Length: 272
Length: 272
Image 1 (cartoon, each protein chain N blue to C red):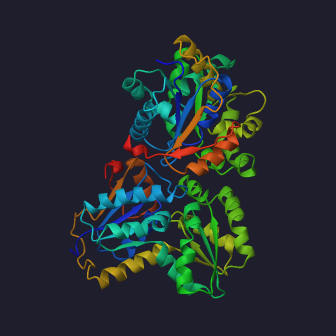
Image 2 (image 1 turned 135 degrees about the vertical axis):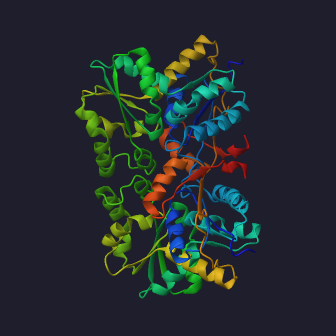
Image 3 (image 1 turned 120 degrees about the vertical axis):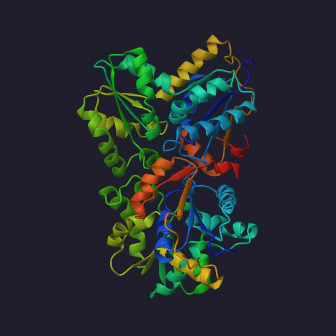
């Protein structure tokens, strides 16, 4: 396997860019092929079978670039499809759930952890499962927050409506006195300040994007796959592909990632 | 063509059920094959190319039932794909946009019509185009309302948050004194009372679902395709198919349609 090969990163749409951003920051020599499934977004309200089928198509697409590893930068796809994907490919593949679960299990003092995520991720109980494997004395409270994704995508990152919806979703987590809250959907770090205000200073917010980039770095070091050379001048280090609306994606991406995304290309993912 | 053949009705998801409901009410002898593209919903934020490709797959699926006509019960698909679909098939096909435009053009007294719909439908300017063909002295004001669909799907049909968002979207339409408002997305009739309260008594709300069912009936009479026999006892008059989450669809459908939907079946639409 080639150290200089790119890393494949995928998400149902734009949310996974918060993960890509962390990878760019923590391991700046790496090349990234990013795919956002904007034609079929969102995943969080869809079934395991469908999300798994979509994810398999995307992995096949990423493999056409001879990626050295794949990051499933979507909580729903990590929850539903990671096991199946691991069976299909022989390169390392990591999701965002396990790294997030690990740091939450380490962080909690009072043994009460909240998870906010899509209906799919909460329904899968995957965060619970991973956290319990690490520490069986912890209690996990899951809360689906289906309106956060459309609110973030509409740009209402700081808005009274988002405050009101967040209060409705989070009040029960405040009441049961959790001390750690996992932001279990890649869109949620974008409304982190709203969430933090409601939860209060006593609650640590865990962003799996950060932890995933850290684990990815460790994995690449362990497998001797870390790219030790900075990209050459003029080299196209970051490539973005979507299944729909490349221009719209580019605009959104440029509001999240400060590296200046010059191009995004639309492909027909159903062909893979 | 067989009078007893079913009518094909499709939408990006559950919204088109408001159209199916009107068809059931106005022409109760007809059989219906309904398809909701729940694996790829929503359409309203996606591109013309993608929505057209999806719509073609669905039309091919519906034709496997030898449908006598097809109703595109989705404003976005009507706006983007109807012309292309007409070229591909030799049975009558109608969308929801033209019937809605026709009644709005007839209804307005002061020549000022508002249209609320998805970004895609507003961007296509299709309501404007059809209304201008009927009455060139009318002015049309389009306003995309992207949060209405997720709010409706979350069941917040009567809720302060929906009121607040609706006020933001509609205030400019109130200010410019329209007298007619087209509900240009099949989800919107479900929050009709909220919209009516904000617009006030002087504004007529046009529901294209109602007009579409009326035009469908006229079309079937004209083509001598109206089914004149009531369905036999025990006959499966209404069949529902989706691309994902049949159980969830059934629950939502039963909250809209009072005929008691007994079953919905998931199929892989990408194979068509």
